Each structure stands twice: as C-alpha cells, then as structure tokens.
Image (cartoon, rainbow, N blue to C red; front, side, top):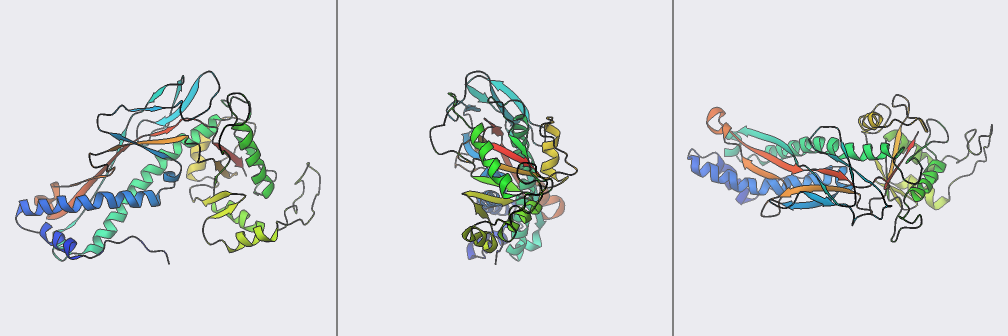
Length: 369
C-alpha cells in the first residue's frame, strides 16, 4: 500500500518541537532554525517525487553570483541558422520565445514562496503528525506552481513545431480514428519522432535517440489498456481510408499480458506510459497547448480532442536552472517570526528560485485524438 512520507517521532525532534513552544524567544527561535534545516531538504525530496515536470527537466544548479545563462550549443546537433529557445521568466506568465545563435541563453529566475503555521500548543505536545500534514501542504502548493510553469514552455515548443521545424514536418499528427488512440497511432508517433530528430547534415544523430516517454489522459490510457483484449483493426477506415478493414488482429500474447497485468507505469516498445489527469478534453494542459497552437494541418479542437504527448527525455532539451545555497540546498526554509507574538503561532516560510528553459523542440511529438 502506498503511504505518504511521514516525520518520524525521534527524541531529538520531539525535543526541538517542545523547545519551539518555549517562553524564551531566543530558545524558541533557535529551535525553529534547527527544525527548518530539516524541513527544507524534506520538502525538496517530496517535490522530486510528486512533480511530473521533474522527470522532464534536468536541473542546472546555479550558486549565488554564478552567471545566469545556459549554453545551448553543447546540448544539440542543430542546423545552421537561428536557434529558438522557450522559457518562463515570471511564475504563472506565458512563455517567452527567444531567437539566438549558438551561444549562451540568458534566463531569469522567478521565486516560488509559501508558508505554514500552527498553534504553539501543538509544538508543546510534539504533534509531528500535524507537522507532516503541513509539509505535504507546502509540497502541494509548490507542485501546483511548478507544474504550470514547467509545462508552459514545453507545450509552447510543441505547438511551435507546426511552423518552426527545419525539416518541414509538424511535430503533431492526427489520430487515424477520431476519439480513439490505437497502436497504429502509437507507431506513427514513433516514426514522426524519428523523422523530426535528424542531424545538421540531415542524417542520424550520433547516440541513442528516440521516444522514451509518453504522457496521456486517463481516457487515452483506457484505450491503451484495451490493447490487451481488443483486436487492433476493428474500426472502419483503420488502414488506407477504406470503408471496413476489420481483421481481428491482436497484439502478441506477451505484450497483451504485460498491459493487462500492469498496476502502475506501463511500457510498450521501450516507451514508458504516464497518466496525467491534467490531460484530456478541455483539461488544463490541453487548454495551455491550445493557446499556442495555430496550425490547421492537423487542426486541434480543445473542446472535443484529446492530446497525447511523446518525448525523448534523453536529449537534455529541457533545463531547470535553480538557485542553490552554500550547502547545495534548493528549498530555503526559515522561521516565520511574524506569528510568534501576534497570534501565538509557530511557522516557517519556504522559498525556491528557479527558471524553465526548453532549448530544442525536436524532442517532443504529439497526437490529436
């Protein structure tokens, strides 16, 4: 059974919580500082587990005073000409698209902040269970902000693939049968991905490249699970636009068994499948993509079509510059002293400075279902 991360009740933590309720302001503050040193790394670990964009972006650790730039040219094998980069410069804003030569791309950190507090009485009785709930609330608030800020430049880069791809292919394709995602669509996405990701000379890129992960709505995941018990060619017009091409052809038994037995993340042809509730007809990520996508070939209607996203997460196309402190920590936790005298509460505030940068849109494809 999956359980939430909890704060273990150790003698040291019980003592710290009780000291935070001390009437001596100096003792209470020092105890809060000591507990903050534990809370910051805990929040960071939970963020890495809970956020979907954490698997898409590679962290670039930026100490205070270091240059705030990302060198784009070492990451990709691009053709000559302008280089397009997508980034978010302010939390919650639309993405910014920059046009650069092969050079250092400057980014702007944006801050994410939140705070928690609870009654001093809870500290006196060392209610670590309530502290656990508060920490999870902090993580939820950070994740909600990071998801929006992280997906926006990715979806903008995907949408721009309709007009900026140098080999003339749209990054997106339309499903063969409206409203259904089939193994044929899966196969065509892999082919489109392979065609888009070519070297500056128009050939194979050195290294192991190809679609590694696919993100889809619960409804599309339902279609994928149906691969295990439904024939592949049961719907009219599946191949060649004919009126009826049903053949009752099924997947190999070994593949069907893996899909049928999968309790968590599934895999087909080496591609990991991830279910996102934010994807689907009129859902959050679909609506964000719709604001950026302007092509009519293929067309996308957010009110009736679903969005399936395929990525190659081995290309290092997505960068997350993040400010770190002198100890290498990303989440800064400090006592929130405004509560101490005014409301007889104990609290902390948490801050995180990050940026989101997509340095190439050839790593991503999609299918409109």
